[in-house]
Image (cartoon, rainbow, N blue to C red):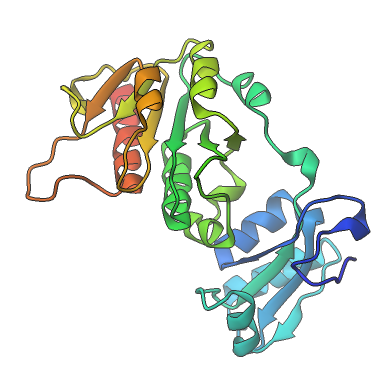
Length: 261
């Protein structure tokens, strides 16, 4: 087992991938289910002995991983003050697990729901989008490396386990990636407050790629031009727009509603 500091790259296991500290009951449970081999160490708060933590201890033991008892102060330090719910793991994702756009598009069909994020920088928003995408049955989320947040521990915590379930495709150029997604036959629909058509006027009974812009900036010009359609979410109060994760949830679940209506 690699016991180097978490900031040291995990070269001792032959993979040039940095280890991460991940915390929260749902996130840790999902990691142990999906990729137990990637969990290097597990810490559990000494005073926690409830059913949820007991389940995690037993789950870890099935993979020969023994939980280390730690004080709340230690876990607060490891999680940098974030809410850890008494559990923290050191995790190393295998580089081979990275999802490419090519492999992702090969899994799509004419009914697929996809969410693309253009310049989202708040990890909490990314985490909330992952959770909504899982709830709506989306095939995955596409994000750009450029001026965008990556999958941080905070994003994983907010995602409440969805980060381990929803494919997250990181691309170098979102505009080119949208063109590739169009080749699968899916229309690309961008959300914009100044769009002429309402989200609720659009036929979403088939597959679709929804594109959401970054906080405060919205869709960038080239991204807008890559969309087949722009839609707005009607606002009826004094607030001009919704948080990006809320807007993404409304779009995804409206598509899901039209399919079940």
